[in-house]
Amino acid sequence: MVDAPFMVIFRQATMVCPFHVSDDIFPKWIYILTTIDELPTPNDTPTCLIDVVGVVTGVSPFLSYNIPRVIGSIRKRHVALSDCSGHDITLTLWGEAADRFDGDDVYSQGQMTMVVVVFVGTTVHAYGDSKQLAGGSSCKWYIDEDIPEINIL
Image (cartoon, rainbow, N blue to C red; front, side):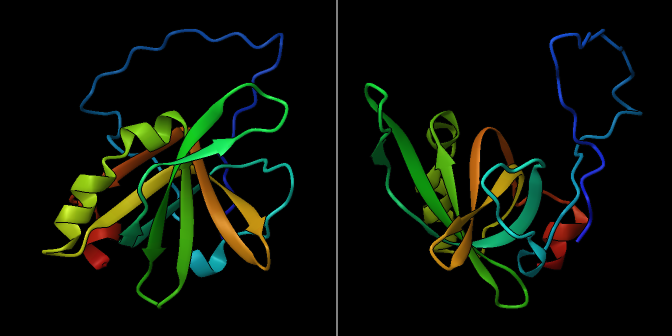
């Protein structure tokens, strides 16, 4: 497993200044992929974001989740992923991320060919005896892009 050296924590005194750089020298994708079998042990307070790649093997419809002590509910969607080694994991997209992920289109594409996705900005959680990934507003994805990790799968 590779530690995430790019973790940034903003505190009250943190200052952010604009930095302008040419598009031709700034990378289009920035990620550090972790294989499904090398995901870190889940804990109650994840401190780093994890990037994974996998073949989408299933997509759930939208589900509603009632949050205790909060008025209302939040939408979520499960995405089943598999890697080259046969390891599987479920990624739960929450709120805005669930709304942005076009699960119906991914499911339709998956009926004709493999759909390979790089998910960046996920966290690892325990669910019973297994690990799961979660993606919220910081989670982004790249579907069938021409990048080496996708081409391998």
